[in-house]
Length: 346
Image: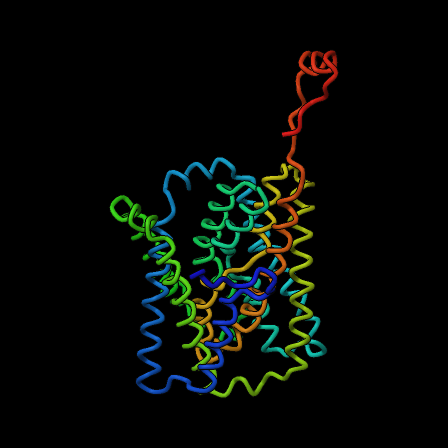
């Protein structure tokens, strides 16, 4: 019996359908009372375990080697934590015509979260880019975001980040960074196990995110935050996010070219510098926004789906680009011309 596969022509990632289904479940059967406490504790533990696995997967030697390509990593970090937030702040001018203040707050939070890891690596690999650089860039962004994102949220969002306090940074560090470092420490003993069971542990990754989504949206339903969003406002949000993604894709590609990066590096910069992490953003939003977290992460969820669809198309097109060729030495070229043959394609 052949194994059923998701149709290649279907533009929506099946995982996104699971996310939407989780949102629907939270709308119909939100966690309340003791159930909400249990779900919240479980989601916190799941995210901690998720970042523990991130630490166990990342080779310390690979990360240290990646530091040699510091110009690429600085470029990605600048796109993630400087250019993105500036565009988010500029979007304040779209309130109240296209966005409500609450949706703009969520959009601004979206621009503050770190880059992705898995999808940046996957798309860079498909497009024949610099995969090691993508691995390190995504990992460095995630680690930096554990501290930078809450600090940016404190300075840019202020009172909009409902439950934000000074100790929010500590709470996020304990939930994300400490498990990551524990994974790094134990990688010597469990790294091979994690590598062998990569596929199975991938379900743990995605299940953790689904649990956080259910918890956040359940809390939003209980507090009635969804009455603040209309279909027209959602359409406006989608339009604004489409423009945001297009601008970042163009800036990362042509900006990297202007900075002198080669094709492989430009691909890594484009995919790592134009995307935002749902796995990192969700737990941070839960800490920073409290009961308003479901509305705050709505822009991030929509952007996440949009970036996957668009970057998948770009990666496939980049994979058909002609490979860059090294110019052969003059003597070699002359000898080939002498026998009636031109330079061979690589």
